Amino acid sequence: MNIHYKNYPTDYIDSLKNKGKRLKARCFWEYFDDAENHAVNSIGFYAKSWGGEKPMSKGTVHKWVKEFVDEIEKHYAARSFMHQKHYTSVKKQSERQVNAKRTKQEPQSPTVPKEMELGETVSERQVNKALTLNSNNNASAIFEGFYFLYRQFNKYAGNKADAKVSFMEVDDVDINRLSVASMFYLKDDSVEKKVGAKKFIDNRVYLNYMEMYLKVFVNGVWIVGSYDTKKEIFTSTDGMSYALEASILADKFAKQEIEILKRIA
Image (cartoon, rainbow, N blue to C red):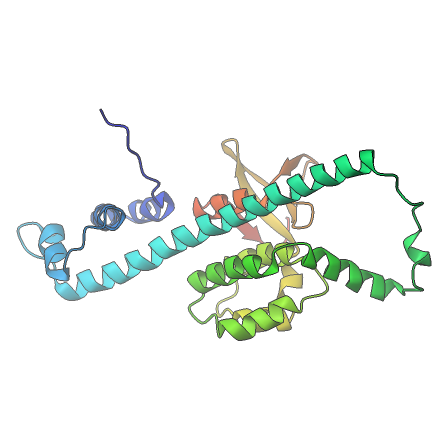
């Protein structure tokens, strides 16, 4: 009885097929399946397997295997990001439920308007709000997801320790939102040479990707609109709104169901 199934990075396979590279697509299927089953084979083995009667050159096989490994790592990086984001959402939901229950059971002090607290300026309140928001999340875990994904899509991601220092010092946005912005940046084909993770943070490149114009494949049709990383809402040009959480966003990027637009025509 056939009851075992696997999740494959089908977007890469579809891309190869669309370019007429069906042999390479079949070779990727075989390599990915071997990797999933821990079947370790040599370059020579694949040269014979993929070449048929005439073995494929080992140079070509080596080049393809390296490309296959990169695509598989991107696949797992996207899934890791999705799972981390889902966990964060579940954790926030649990905290909201606990806080709601506590609110019902415990008497609360009168609410003091923010403007009256400690004589803070508007700028100070914004910074403190961001710091509080970031400290309430598992910042180290979020950074690991951020850097892992960044490294998969940019081989010049830079020193991890230096990037983490900059990441932990971010005080103008929620770091979850920054992570989503990095995904837009890394998938922006209009930027030929991507900067490293530390420079992405230090130069506040993420601010350019807080609200993006997108074309999204929804229910069988392409829809143009804008995406707010804070609200995680995609709003089409005709005013329709769609919930688009980071986990779904990553999945749609993997399936090539999102295109970044510079503006809405």
